[in-house]
Image 1 (cartoon, rainbow, N blue to C red):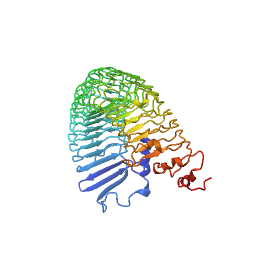
Image 2: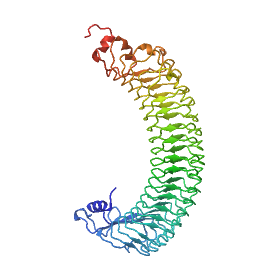
Image 3: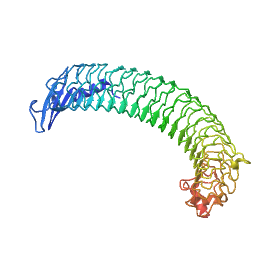
Image 4: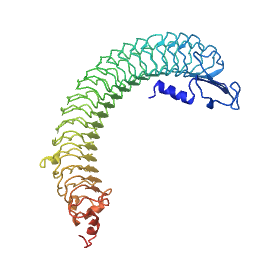
Length: 564
């Protein structure tokens, strides 16, 4: 982001420093005001005469205060980059029909009482990039038509009652990047039509009770990147129309019971990147309409039973990048409508039985990048609607039989990048219950051999990833019954041969051609693998042979005798 000095330099270079633009009814009057303006870029027409484009122009003049000769019928005024320090009472007297006023990049420090008196038709007011630190009560008096006000990049440090009196029609209010450290009770009195309030990048450390009172039409409140440490009871009282609340990147340690009372229309809440260590029962009371809750990136290590009580409309919950170690029974009690749950990038080692028992509508569960070592039976019970389960990037070495027994609707299962080794005697019952599974990822594990019949009941399976393991051989009819199989990835293993008999149980006419990837295996290349020419997309690119050069394989498969 450019700072004030950079912007000033650019303006000076291009001679746009300090300009006032007057748009007068059917023609424009433009006045450029600057202490320094290179003569070689000055217009070559009389400074007080209309040119053929209907412009009345004055160049290279300087102002330390608001000009007194602004025509009364102007509708657009821009006074940019001057040295104006104070807006005094009645600064714009006589400019009756102005609808747009831009005062950016001046040195305004103070807005006096009734500074804008008489601008009854003004619709937008831009005060960005000034040095405003003082706003008096009734400073904005008389702006009865104003819809948008921009106070970004000033040095305002406190918001208190009376400062915004007279702004009853403002719907957009931007005050980001100031120095605000506190918001007093009833500070926004007078902004009864406000719909969007941006308070990001401030120094706010505390919010008082009823801080946002008198904002009955507000739909979005953004408080990201502040220093808020707690949310007291009824802090958002009165915001009955609020739909989106952004609190990301604060220092919140405590959310008091009743903090969200009254937010009956809130659908989106972002509480990411905080200092909270425990989600207590009743934390989210009052949020019956909430649909999306983001709680990622923080210090949460414990979830009390009932923490999500009352969230009867929630469908998306993000708890990634926290510090959870154990998921207790009924941890998600009350979340019967949640469809997407993200628990990735934590330290979860244990999921106790019935931890997910009330997630009846859950479609997607992300548990990747945790520290689980074993999947036990009943660990994943209570998820009848689950479609996508990600258990990749962990330390899983053992999967008990029937671990997935109740996941009858699961279509995608990722177990990649673990330490899985199958028991050849009981391993054939590991995937029992997965009658809808289509995509199975077992890549980057420690699998040496696959139990016979391990995939037998996965009739809808279309894709299997077994790459980057230690597989040395495959048993006959390993893929028996997989009539919908389209792709098998066996790359980066230790296979020396791949017999067609392994796939003999598959019908000759599959729904689509079966593609087999066996790249980066130490194959013994002879006529026994020629059948792969029709099955491997990698055939033309070349496979790795330990006995001959690949360029001779087509001749070998065509029964040509001239082979080395």
